[in-house]
Image (cartoon, rainbow, N blue to C red):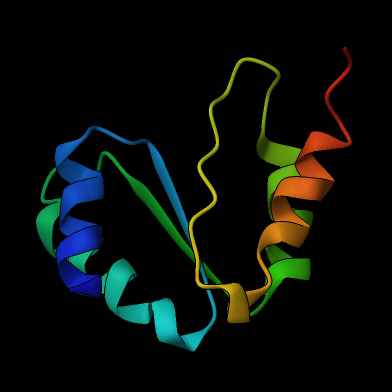
Length: 88
């Protein structure tokens, strides 16, 4: 099912996919397999801290970011870090 999720990301026209940890490798593989035109940048990182570092410098104020994971991955750290950058 992870591979299918990656394929679906490409079909939706998402421009960048960041997957976190070794259990998400199949998501990345599915996206790469489905993305024959290389429209979706697929990046694999080790953990939430690495994802925050990557996204903090890449996300613009008008970007939409979906953070999806099981609780064990602790990716709420990513959404909390990005939310802290938003001015209200």
